[in-house]
Length: 615
Image 1 (tube, rainbow, N blue to C red):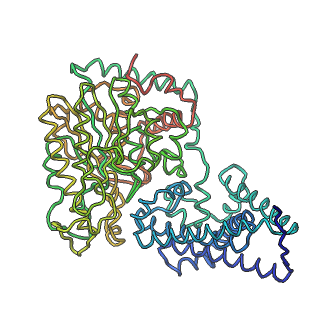
Image 2: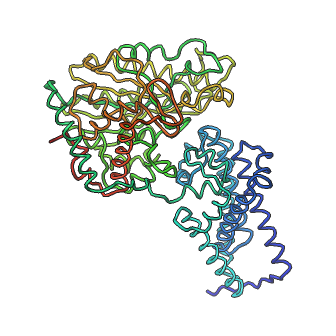
Image 3: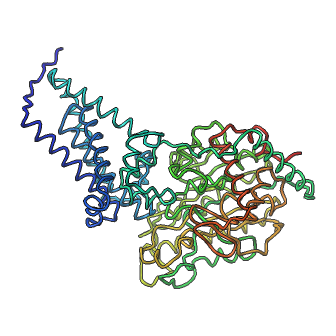
């Protein structure tokens, strides 16, 4: 069967008109992205494009023009390619607006991997917007495919132009994709007027534009190599802290060193009564406080607000901090860990000590590539919403309840083998409006989402209290580390402005020992970071520590809690840490250890730094 070539008369005048139309569409699409990024402020978008940052805006428009040309060339259809490009940019703008609204963060390149998470996208955007987006995608894809099939009927001259456009745009996009490589001319063009703000990606995108910020977050090493990194340096660090760990371990008198250990990362669990700008009628966390006031507890400094669950989880399981990474590495689970076959963590450590290791997350397995990541970290099994035995929900809440998740944990603990269980709950996940018919915690001013959220965390607090009470009835010793991953994204701009930055990143945490043997059970005002949890637990519970955990304890004494642009000094938070010589040395050592593990030669891993301490 032969395909008859379709003769297309592409006159000079028509070519100019189509070219100008493409440029105008791309220019307006770039303006639209600025508009959505700036909370739908046309004034700010126009000032960025026409006054404040014109050069950077035009550079971004040029990149988008190459993207549009690439799609058109691939499809061999001007109208098919332009339609697909415009629909894609429209949906990208919506995603940018929603992420800035709920998480105060722009869309990163790695976020595009979430496009297949239909249920999460529906929850974030709402059903009407989700349906509209899905309909637009289907129509654009079908139209593009139809035009692509017809493109094989085009004549030879058009095919030559198509191939030339594909080569030009493909090379340009490939070059732009290497934005962070040394000597990149596009990066140099941005550098002429750009002020990069890596510690705040929100401000970074505002300053250089959506396209510039997006390019800045492409393809960079997890960390830059510290100046004094070497095998000799790492060998000395390992030897020093392994000796300290061995000395500490020799002082332990406890006969049992394999109690069950349960990590519970509670979705959006936080204390709204600490925030200014509104009031709550009653205290949703009363059941939680009844437990917390009896054990080691306080506040945890979260690197995220309104989201970033996997990053807090990464810190808690690996004991490595987000603050030390290059700012472009925004999600270690998807950008880093999947490159490893194994990675040191409390999971792998306890597995070596004879524990059975189980991850429980009553949601799907593909979020943040958890199925793959949990294998890398050393989990024996992953129980998700598809395999969990208990799937009850509360009222109109679509997510599996905390009480059900805790019942799954209790079943898992019924074993003669010591258990390490890591539970990531879902009950208190957004959206909140309409979850519950009866709301016991009214807010002033009234806010339905906030009132549903406080009802949610109240039920979560009750479930936790009941779970811990059940553990106390068992003859087995069980240790629990419980924490909220981040605050929910329900607070207005006015409420956020009324509170210091750190207050929007402080959640609740507690350690619990079913036999009441924690060292500092009377300390209820601790401020810490999640990467200290594992080393703190070993110390509080009187368990053997590793050389790495011995180091973390030394670091914690000097720097009790820190995340990017938030450093706890022991009494207050500062945007920069007031280093003395000892703190500076420990901080630089932490960077060396983390670099060696994630980007270096893994000298410390080979020397068993992350295993039980030894001489």
